[in-house]
Image (tube, rainbow, N blue to C red; front, side, top):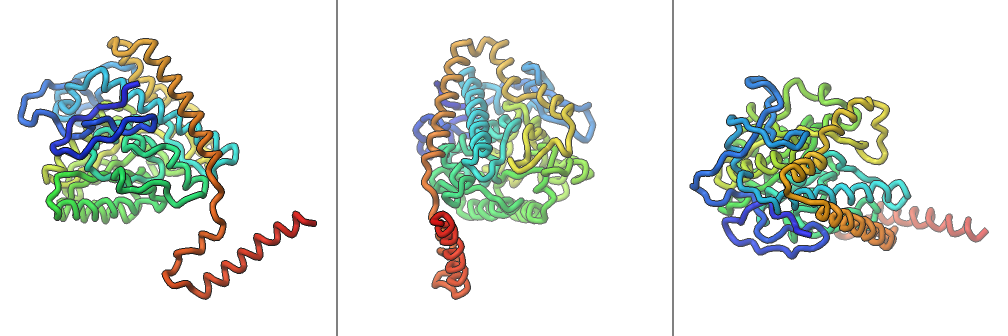
Length: 415
């Protein structure tokens, strides 16, 4: 099965990562345009809103799987104008395997193997498109739902599950893939990304930084502070907001009076709303934003307009605050089905490709189940370590209390 190579060669060699079953990036994956200075054929785009409205949406692929034209967005479209059938199949594979992994993680939580899980169901195109737009030397700051981006950065998906099982505090070395550990505190990673990007600029590097957050996090003060610092210091950072319509049980209408992408204007940098269920548009717009950041043109805000098909996390019940007909309307815009329709209509994939991918999906699901169930139980007393460098009397007291509490279970079992 071909790995996704839906991005182009970097301006400088960063060393390719080996391909494997964990979604590692194929050699030459990057977000910059090939052939700088050459004239490109304009790809096809369109808006989902009337021209001149305040909520224009960059879209390259309709829900029916058709490429459409709109000259107003030719600059974005140029970033995917020469995408190959092999690269398109790679994007499709990424989304299918990411969804399968996510489904397995959700099932494992329901079976008691994970304490919690935040599903990305419905957001695969926003994550795979933007993730494949990054270069190997770019740095990514995720929230806790960027499983598709982690896949694109070469993080073994099973490493994402350790924290949700409670066996570690992260599960991977951030510097090995330039992919930061998951951030649970809402919105704080936007500041981390901005500070890192300011350092990148001072170092004179031409790499970019991207920070992911949701529409709910856009209401956090940390995000506004990050916007302001990034603008003032011209930091090479892209703010990627996945607007999935719901901040847990709060709808978008209760969070903002204007489309989220328009907030960038007040801070002095561009904002773009993209169809987050369109993997081509997500890829193109993120390439555009990262490219300008690497050139020293400062930050940009991308609002990927998408939908959370499942619960906020496995502890949430979305049926209490949203209607089934809303989900049904978004199911018609499914990002995977959209690209499959295009692949089939353009004769870019046959039944053999889809069958092989289904088999690979089954293999991935089995491996995820086996790895999670084989994870060792964590040391129950490790939580007390490294709180203070030289120890602390209160921590010692709490440790002793916890030890007595644990011993009480052994006493009960012995009765």
